[in-house]
Length: 353
Image: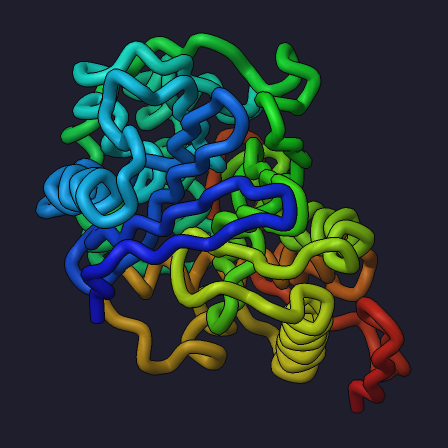
């Protein structure tokens, strides 16, 4: 259920953070964040631009003006920062760019998505089609998945970006940025004093979605787990972490441990399933038997990310190598190599019989 009231939080150094609730897509809610510190007024993420998202953003700014007395208008913004190039976080930019001259920033690995959106969409759609074939998805189901994937994608168009975060030395005024690829190539988290904006890198209740690096460089489970460890030292100085969805996180290091543990268990479950030959689609159906609609694609990507992680580390064999020919996409059949103790990630060990 969408929360309707803006909430305010203060850092130990008197920065003010306002959480603006947004309906991003039907059934998906999230937040934009407005930060006031020193002479900076920074909007972090802008919503999807779909449905009521823009209206909710405007309503949030109005609440901040009327209830808290801040200059929360488009003219007062100094910066608009995008945490990562997923459309539920940047899709509202066409609306926002018409209303403010604030400087727009994004990480360089996500720059192409914003400035060459139409080209990038075609490339990703091509890669996704090949991936679905290799995953073992039937032709009819592939078409349904691609139709869902492309739905609403045409509502956004390329925008100009004023700077990338590396050009700003990963600092925008009092906000320090850290690049954490995995969930998205250009995913960043932002810290101000004892507050962290973890976007979709770390969420309170949901384990953030993973997709194989086969679809987009600098994604993949390996990159994501490395990025979690990059955040662990920061976690000890963070009092509250604000995700792009769900409630704030109070114990960030504990949440990191929970996410690592979940992926470790899932990798073990995949290895157990692969005592017999299976495709990615088979694994997905076993892990997520109730997935429907767009969640079928998310399930296939999540399963593929775990398969890719295991294959890269030598745990799996491909049984139909002879069927794989240049310029020919075929379903790939995997099987684990042997029964063994497996230390997958962290300190957990599993005996895979």
